[in-house]
Length: 239
Image 1 (tube, rainbow, N blue to C red):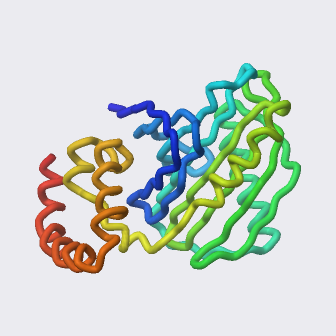
Image 2: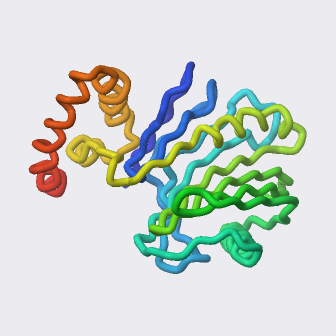
């Protein structure tokens, strides 16, 4: 089953995921939080988890401006470098994924740089989606532990300049940390079906923005986490 919740943010909120990264959703865009999964034909056996989709509903276009956050977690360790051959291989894989979904496109520019434990690739493309020409920008963070995070922006060309700054701000807000430090709430996630469910996000924000902002709160959470994670995995599995 798929859990899908539509919400509209009036101010930025930080989304923290169990994959070890967080980001700030675009202001005043409608959000769809889901557990949707997409089988990747370009990576047999791998699945992309769609964490969130944001759309600008006051658009005058046929296809509303859209931002998507997706995650592939292969669980395999691989060597990541920033050579031109590696960049070309990643680009080819990206376009193969699009083609499998019936989307054709051309690359207009791309850059790749080294980041801790991985690489960051930024691409600008022109694509055809159901016979509609669109501009598509993509940011990909590829890590040596098998994690791939994607931030994708699709928009009709006449609205591209209007929303580009919002997308750049959105992509620049992505922050990564070791996944072992994530501290996801296993019981709440199992109960509500997703670590991105609004109820789980609410609990996470109380922890991060209230409890952990004081020394006494941080001390309490350190002790609580040792106690909590001694039994929560078993309860989560039971759920």
